[in-house]
Length: 534
Image (cartoon, rainbow, N blue to C red):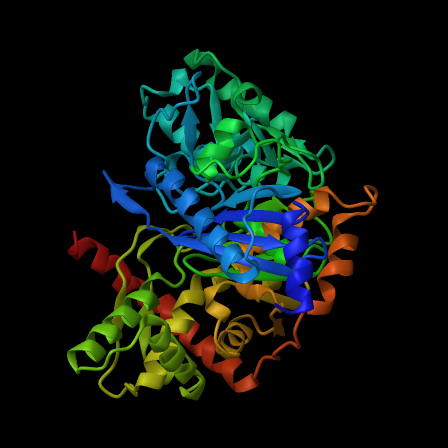
């Protein structure tokens, strides 16, 4: 064991490390870091959402089983790397997929299955709420799910005692505190940037809208308390410690920072919290977050307005569909390899196939891929049907095919970004990327730079993802200088880890523009596919 490992062992033994755990779309991941944000250990657990009765959901049994499995994997990594048991940390925090709908009764039990961000089933609610609030309410937002349930007269609505998100629910069960970070809260209901809390005027408008229904609650009563980054949000209870670690080794009493969404942890992980900075989180979903210098001129349906974990306004161009279709093709390639007698892992296939996109033609050879596994709000789809099409004279090569899969995963997000850059004139200096899209060389950077026509850099810790960003927020809460702002803290601890940007290649930019046009026209095929494949 070298000196660095010895120092890390002593740090872990003393309970001075920080822990972040994020519930992602396909993985629950844990990151243990040192006070200077250096990664020490990690753990993970794979899981998947299910489509039940037309609703995308995760069973809450899977939440708790997945949490304990992820933590056990982290403990195993700590034991293997440092020969020490993990009993406590200086602080911890939990994050998850933003938005969605977790409605709880007075006993804090679920009234209906968790409805995830992936559901596009709240169109009527958004049509009514957006003009009422003078705010583009996306279908995946908690308030949209709530009002849709009200419009449909769902029987559970009068019984709601608390309304939260996945991260907020986990935090509530671990601490007993119905609290939430402002970034996560901004995906439930609009935030007033002057107060850093839910917009009181808009809340009053909503309450007035539903008052004739005599539901027995107001928004303020059922929504969580909103906190900014750095504020304490409770302590781990004995019951909560057992949910994380059924062995009983993890000690209660650990301070928790406010729970955040994956958008907020992505901004932290990439040090993209200053105006004109931005980041792209690219995985199962793909979304770009651009910190604004000033308010937008008007409401845009294709853009969300959320905030950073410390409350600065952010424009989000969100796409529900990211890597799922690409992952399905990679799995098929694996089956082909196995049928030919080659024993290769999924990781090896990703490593060999994805870099081929760089050698594809700039426009992907005339091929068309549409990756809609689920609906896509920004382009007007409530459902999705992944499809692939080509002309007889398209250049159907593996390199072009792979590039088409990459490009397809970025088109819906590009639709939203066009509004931001072309209609609003927002200037973006650089995009910082994180998520599985950027693993393995600079292929992901090149494809993203082509799609957005801006330089794309990757933090050295990008592979650690949102769990690492959540651990950094836990460390920020326990910083020695409590007056230090989040941007200054991140500049001090993370700025040095940002890699050299990949600049957009003009030919790639031109090629993506051609593919994007083809993709936009091809959405007519997608609509027919949805009618046909029932």
